[in-house]
Length: 57
Image (tube, rainbow, N blue to C red):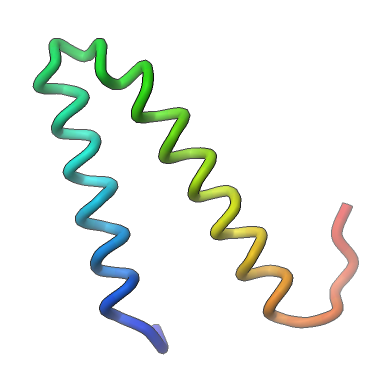
């Protein structure tokens, strides 16, 4: 919660892309869900790497 503006922007992007995918008769979700998941995974990895020298598998 140290950076609420980027977190809010990320939430708005996820919501907007999901709504766009639904607006395209759910076919847009075929592209947007993997894209959002991939970006979220990289954000998580950056967060874990920044939190300390913990071992990752």
